[in-house]
Length: 111
Image 1 (cartoon, rainbow, N blue to C red):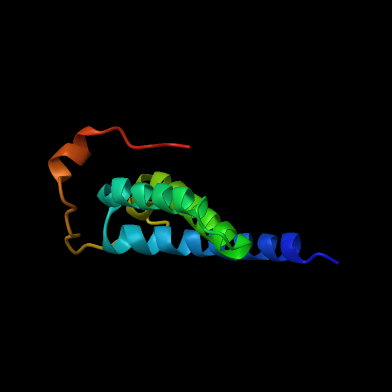
Image 2: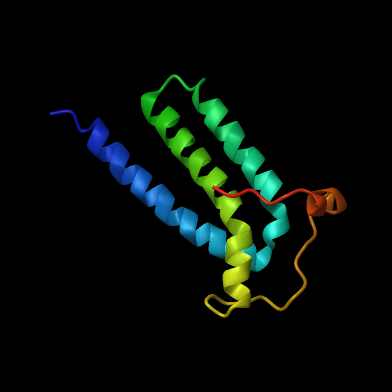
């Protein structure tokens, strides 16, 4: 039996599940304006997975990168859900990312 596909599916499920948690917590503590940095990190992980010789390392890096790319597109929606009261809203000021004036002019990504 080859367990690689089965275990890859389980690992993917766990990484995506953690993605939901980090999106909620990331928006709570950082805010939605950090999306370009998270998107960039996800793209770097996906590209880096091409150069990892071990199958497990490549799979886990690629899935984690894809989860970060997805999460970057969800941060604004999570901010809206928090404002609606569906999730906890952090009333404290959130740290502003570098180049925030430029980021605010960009359209937010959507999948």
